[in-house]
Length: 176
Image 1 (cartoon, rainbow, N blue to C red):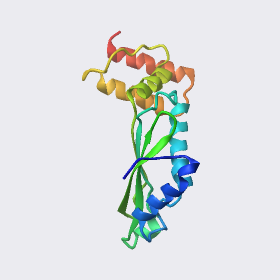
Image 2 (image 1 turned 30 degrees about the vertical axis):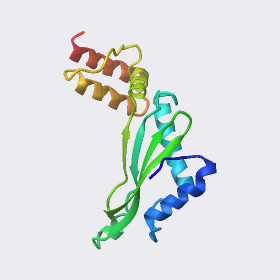
Image 3 (image 1 turned 90 degrees about the vertical axis):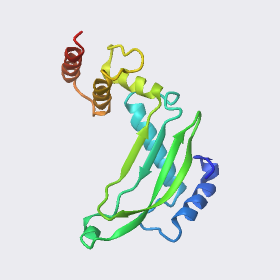
Image 4 (image 1 turned 45 degrees about the vertical axis):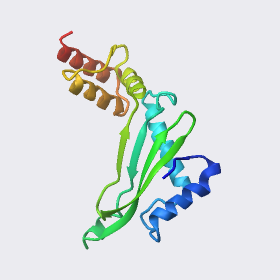
């Protein structure tokens, strides 16, 4: 599939690509350019709220698959057809770079996998950790610690007391 920039001018191209992949399936699939645009906007807003900038999100990739209809269908052991999308952030817009038709169990939850750019990771970590300076690429010794710091960054807002307690815990593990 060729990359399609997500903007109103390309709505017909996006919907045609979705129609080709989905076939006749409509119920649990992504069928509109508006839904694709909303997904890109939601992802961008999520990371901007956590400290990333649009520029730092350049190169970020998102794979998203909606969930099934729920437990009422699952009791019968039914499977449903859905759409899996891959989006990539460019310099000015998000682009649709992959569409796949998937068969999932009715009880499956939605899945979103995000591969953030190095710049976005640093911005989010800086927003979460304040003045704690992270230099260089994390070594294998610090990788679990760095992952926990990013987890903290993705949590809802904490009070300053909670952030201070987390920073003290991180300092203790670093033996600073």
